[in-house]
Amino acid sequence: MAIDVLERGDLPFPGSLPEFQRLFPDEAACATYLERARWSDGFICPHCGVADEPRHISTRPRVLRCRDCRRDTSITAGTVMERTHTPLSTWFWAAYLVASQTPGMSAVQFQRQLGLSRYETAFQILHKLRAGMVRPDQDRIGCKSEEHVEADETYIGGRTRGKGRGVHDMVLVAGAVEVRQRKQQGSRNKRRTGRYAGRLRLAVVPDRSARSLGGFIERTVAPGATIITDDWSGYAKLAERGYRHTAVAERGDTQVTETFLPIIHLVFSNLKTWLRGTHHGVSPQHLQAYLNEFTFRFNRRFYPFNTFRSLLGIAGDVTAPTYAEFYTNKSQPTTSSRRV
Ligand SMILES: [Zn+2]
Figure 1 (tube, rainbow, N blue to C red):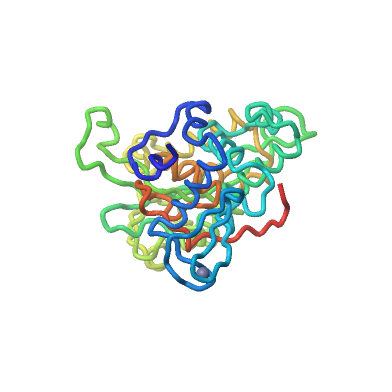
Figure 2 (cartoon, rainbow, N blue to C red):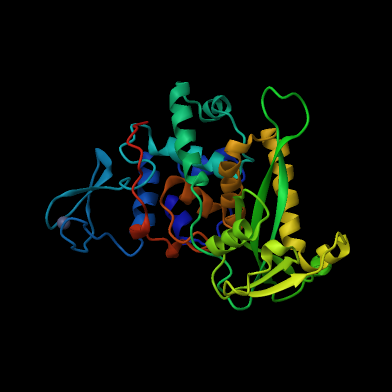
């Protein structure tokens, strides 16, 4: 059953945990999926480089043995499950929950849903899976000529423990989002004339100076990209920094904003709702981690199976719509040596 998941790019993401558990019922199903996901063009022995069907050892489903040099390769090496003592199926089910549910799930809820006997195990798994989400995506956006980037900044109100109710410590967040055009305009999207968001980048910045905002743009948007901003002086030097820049005179007119910067404002609005609703306010020192999690989910929202694989550390291209495209030569070894 697990093989279907790999071969079918159009497979809908299971709507419930029991449905998901039927796709990945046991260790063997998960091991098969892992092997196929990591060596989609067939196994290549990392020790001797020979490409040959490996030997499977029935008592050790996580190990592939090279027929040529007879050395073993772990299918979990370099993933978040490396050296784990927990069943692979538990990891898969846990990643499903994190990928599919609105964030903010506690380790206790997590433990209950997965039927784990130890709280510590649930806590460690959740911690490791979430670590993948708070690592920022590094590549710069806006490199395609047919899309442009909207950039703006907004204040997020943090609530600080011990300061009572209300908003304290407003934090400035800069955002940049790719704007794409639907090929066929649907009637539902007339207001935004078929435009929709591509990839997103968000960062806490110290102030609204050209140094802070321009620096954010340079770190997150590819040189040569077309950028639309308001006419704030913090964005005035973008053309000098190598961008095709359009500055829109906003002057507090929401109609202008709605026309020229609709997508980034929609993103800011969703971000604030998410922060309020699921985290009940976030302290400033943790805000960047939450921005990274929001961005991680946002950028993978059309492809939940990619979210799932990213969480487990077995993903290749984050926007790949098919399963044939991932191939984990790119995957990073996990830095934590803590065993779960
Ligand atoms: Zn070998």
